[in-house]
Image (cartoon, rainbow, N blue to C red; front, side):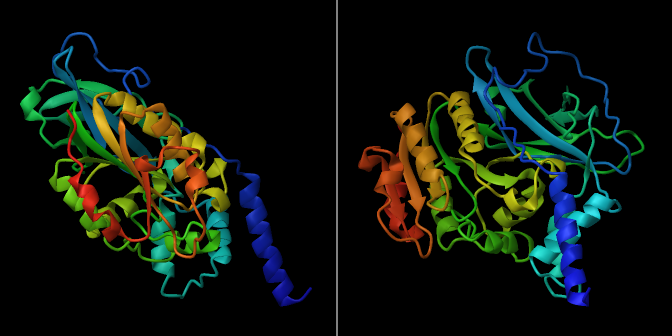
Length: 385
């Protein structure tokens, strides 16, 4: 067998090994009260003792979430979502994943792209830590989170013992670590009022250049290249933010990409917002469909946001690369008085009329655009009471 044939066989074997461990799995994030259990929902409780059984080699990420004000109970309810994991480097299937993905992307270990590739891939190689107790603190209030699941994630709605006016834009939240652990794991909760306008925005090819129409380029843009903003979109979003709009980023990117996406949003000067990504375990999927955008995942997340804030109006922003027109038009038909406008970005090289993709939705409800400056007048949308 020639050396070149042997090399190809080794790469194929790596791909087959990883694929044998894989089948697609996705769990939609649910945020509406009634779909996520509410902690301590009876009377306010005395401060809890810190109960966090976190080991020194385990870490926590607290994702940016939302809080809603419950008028009937006169209190804020905070949606809390975190992930507990242990970084891992040495295992056969992890090494197989790295080798296979590197071969698919044609990345040499000595190439300039390799350090960035390793950094992006690292979060896909961690061990999820289940059955963990995590104690949290918000404005001096201790909150005991639900135990982590097998995927390392925990989610809950927690009543906050603060006055209405004490939650203006964002609240800080942190993990109460054991006494001998001086590390700081913190996050933010967005205070979203009962009324107003929220922007639900996709990420890939809506505000970040990804090229979802070319799967190999999509993977390269995800793992090999610095993220690049879609020109003009951060300025548009900042103009909306100045009018008081809240932001919710709903994407088919997996939670493992959150650190990179969070850094991108800050660097590109996008307004802060809650994050709603896709729950994926490497053992349940393959890298060939890591970034797929199934309707079954995005639709319930957006519907949950509408349920969580029944008196708010919404602007939906996406792109024509995959299913955003179909998903958004379905939501607008089901909620005609709640959706102010749908904006869909046409991707470079796309041609033809996109009308059919909106499934008969009245044309005044949606607009296809090529450049962000076409939406300049959209900032004139006013909050409807």
